[in-house]
Image 1: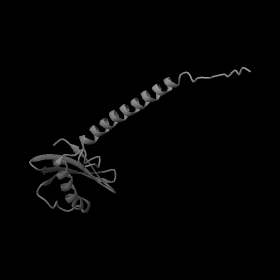
Image 2 (image 1 turned 180 degrees about the vertical axis):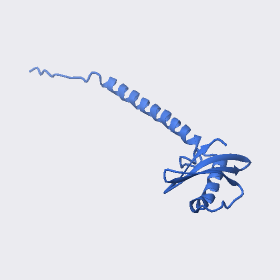
Image 3 (image 1 turned 90 degrees about the vertical axis):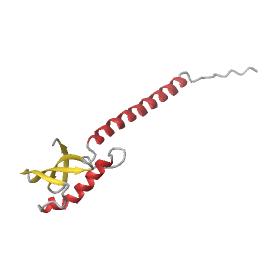
Image 4 (image 1 turned 120 degrees about the vertical axis):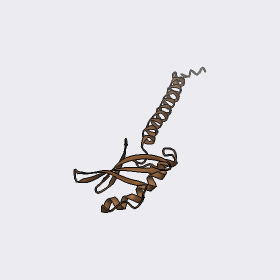
Amino acid sequence: MKRWVLVLTERGSDREGKRRRIATLLVALGGLIGSCAVGGVLASDPIGYGVPIWPFANPVDRAENALLAQVEPALRSRLPLPTANAQVLRTTESYGSVFWTLKLRVEGEERCREVAVGPDVKSRRVPC
């Protein structure tokens, strides 16, 4: 007695594997490019973005952050600054906040920051 069997093969299974590998490679490449772009933005002003840590901030940025943390209580209570390394250039009140433009001397460099003191303290780097 002859027995006939129908054999089915999966055509294209190799194509699906290639597509998955290519898709995985593209996602990994996109993630790498995206993380480099985000890192570049964070490195432009690590203190303003709140990430004064190693991959984004250099030692001068970390020293500037420490100086701002030292000056912040005086700004909140509108007292004179406790250190000679910080100087108030301008004070502006608007939008329910007080904006202080500070000149900071940090490790031989002069940097200027605009600090907004409201419910939260926010700052951004500005030209001197």
